[in-house]
Image 1 (tube, rainbow, N blue to C red):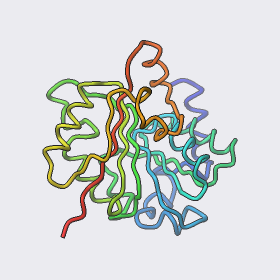
Image 2: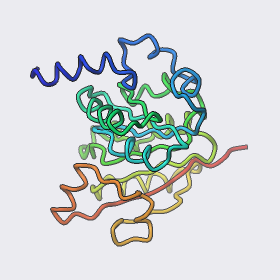
Image 3: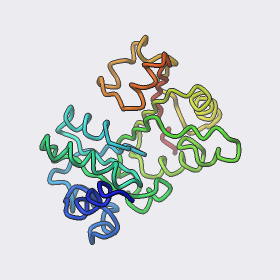
Image 4: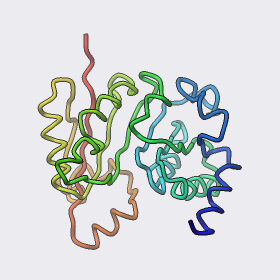
Length: 222
């Protein structure tokens, strides 16, 4: 492991906005984000597999009246988002180091108002379908933690993953696609991503790839 990573990990331990297993608060977050961590009781948006947390920090700057949590297992990437948040004084942000399949250990039912999934690993092999962040087992997790009518925003360059996701959502009786496009930058939905671009997105755009985007929600039952 390089020295720079070790330095970042050491700084994460000292930072209030990085929440990881070494900290006592880590196991007390579920159902208590707006009580124990955030200074203001506001709607919570979560960015999954956030990497450098472009959306966590970008949206937090746009919406000071909301709270934002970036989730990733890579501590060195979370350090980047944490640094941006500190530099920009974004006190409505947090960075959670955790596996996404364990989301229900950190968020209570209906505690989250909105989710962002941006450029996840497409997992193209059939044996890895269950690891796709829009596969049925992950959708069930999102359904559990999302508030009624809470939105999921999904952004990718990968046509196979996008079409897989659309088809899966259309087959389910409990989901509703609110909007979708295969070419975000030529779509009326362009404003819905608030001009925020990830590093991956910029690379794909430079290669001439179109960016796919959809918004969906889980229907109220009963």
